[in-house]
Length: 320
Image 1 (cartoon, rainbow, N blue to C red):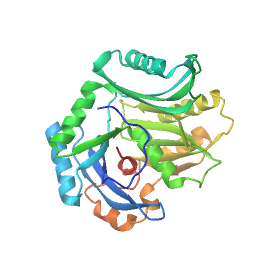
Image 2: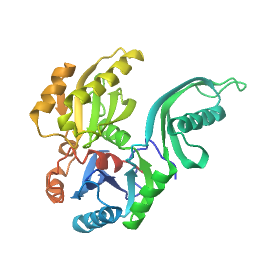
Image 3: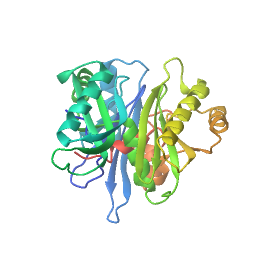
Image 4: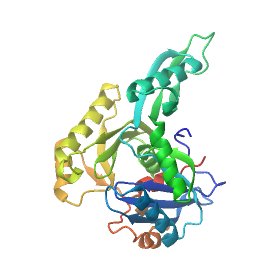
């Protein structure tokens, strides 16, 4: 099963977005109204101990579907593994056939594995069009790759829980798609740095002009982010610096944080002071009609918040 990157909501299928995190599983289902806006159909979550076994995780997924009454078992999920790579690529002069070979080689070099041991996909952001006489043309976009064993393990987990996965995305791109989908046209001339946090990882990307630019995932294995504000700021600085080095003149104007957010106000003060930019804690549920009633149903998560639901909501935008 290949990764499928960057598709948006369609009406023909009833797909649930499901996110299996460090110590929780969350799911959401969205619909599109007659005027093209998103509407929340269902949302919910279940917790389990960190480091839970596959059996315990499967049981939590089954409880989630039973308690919250999800009618569809067709799902879009995201693969969370430290081995996953998501990186920007640029090639100046390649034919379309040469591009595939070049990206496979890059994935193999990054994962130190070969051939069928790797699952890879890519999204072209810019392409120079058909090559003339095999001369090649510029390509740029996003490469996503992971060990096949990790992908197979994830699919087996979903199958054991009675779910039918039709699309696999990455958590970072899912959150970016949600942000751009909800705020399309509202911040056209503003560049923002969006970071989605779990306890020990963060997906970071720059968003500008309806584009997700240079996404990356960073890990903090020694402690939770709430105790590592300085390290988090360093990674945000790296992302902002790379954005500038690549020649983007429009400066990033704010930091948007979502996901499993720390409760300590000192964390946000450290981020704001370290970067000199305003910090927004983003709750996407507050921007989707149907939020109040459906959020009250999501009490299966002791610390449920709209921020924690960002990934599964972004996954719910996807269709095969």
